[in-house]
Amino acid sequence: MLFKVISRPAHLASVKKVAVRSFASQSTAIPTPAPAEQKTINPKKYGGKYTVTLIPGDGVGQETAASLKDVFKAANVPVEFEQYDVSGLTSEDEDLFQESLASLRRNKVGIKGTLFTPTSRLGHKSFNVTMRKDLDIYASLSLCKNVPGVESRLKNVDIAIIRENTEGEYSGLEHQSVPGVVESLKIITRAKTERIARFAFDFAVKNNRKKVTAVHKANIMKLADGLFLRTCRDVAKEYEHHGITFNDMIVDNTAMQLVSRPQQFDVMVMPNLYGNIVSNVGAGLVGGPGLIPGCNIGREYAMFEPGCRHVGMDLLNKNAANPTALLLSSVMMLRHLNLDEYAARISNAVYETIETGTARTVDMGGKDTTREFTAAVMSKL
Ligand SMILES: NC(=O)C1=CN([C@@H]2O[C@H](COP(=O)(O)OP(=O)(O)OC[C@H]3O[C@@H](n4cnc5c(N)ncnc54)[C@H](O)[C@@H]3O)[C@@H](O)[C@H]2O)C=CC1
Ligand SMILES: O=C(O)CCC(=O)C(=O)O
Image (cartoon, rainbow, N blue to C red; front, side, top):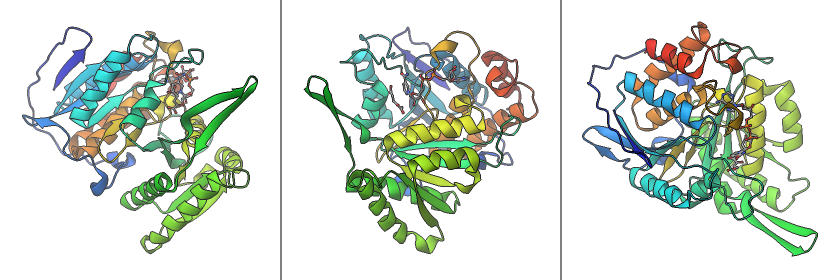
């Protein structure tokens, strides 16, 4: 495996190839994010290795990316990273951000941490959101599932949260009509709702899930969420013959149901902001943001990232972050690249490390550092 870091002197490390064993797969715990017809077309592959864009991100980003690179190296994963150390903390990284987008356009597949977005700098657009919009990576998936070995108040939680990633409340269309009055537009379109609903149902079919719940607030936003709900209902009819049931739920009730009876949910589909909130509730149910893998999928590009997108500035350089969310996101990426055996090795090692208590970071109730946890995962590969 090779790493290439942009913005720093590039260093390349080659690794001997070893035979890959086939493991009884625990990676079925991690779904394949997109059915074959939605998989990225022609991800960049050279000399038997995929080139993947890596953007570590702010906060816990560098340390969890280091864990990812160590684990990939130990598992001899045939992936070369093109690393871009973009940061949302400075306003000078626009050029580097554009370079990272160009890299993604070339490679088609990327993996990232979360980039910080200041609330105070008005002109600074979120790099995270810009990337999703510019590359039209429209479907976000967060997987909220109990992790054996991590204490949680509620058991048997296994929810795939699918969120529209490019419109809704994140349209960025705001203006002050007169001083003291601000209008902020939420955009819902039939076309984008149809494709996210199809993505959710295809995901359910592909991953043997049985129910899709559309989350909305159509009782108040009768036009916007009304269109979202009607479109989901229409798409649901196309999937009846697959034996998938469909229901819908108002977002406020959903919040209450999630914290009292989350086992009723299987696949959930919703507009952008609700998806962010629901995946954060989901993270709280199973043990926190360090455990939730995720990805963003479009027709041409796929970007893998922890599912509830926390920056974790408070953990910067503390060697205390939990790299599980990023490692399990990389497992999704490997499945997306049809590297299932590597995916199985890494997910088995991560789950086994946590379940047996070999190592657990503080958020999982343990005492181990990021590096100790990573070493334990590597020892189990
Ligand atoms: N603040 C920002 O720039 C951004 C915020 N967001 C959104 O805002 C929400 C909240 O974000 P923030 O307030 O920045 O939360 P945050 O980054 O402060 O995280 C909340 C808590 O989770 C912990 N945490 C995060 N990642 C962890 C890890 N890998 N291991 C262990 N503990 C971890 C942090 O230490 C912190 O205590 C996110 O869910 C996201 O949707 C999204 C992108 C950027
Ligand atoms: O990029 C940001 O700062 C916010 C994005 C966000 O809320 C999200 O990723 O869900």
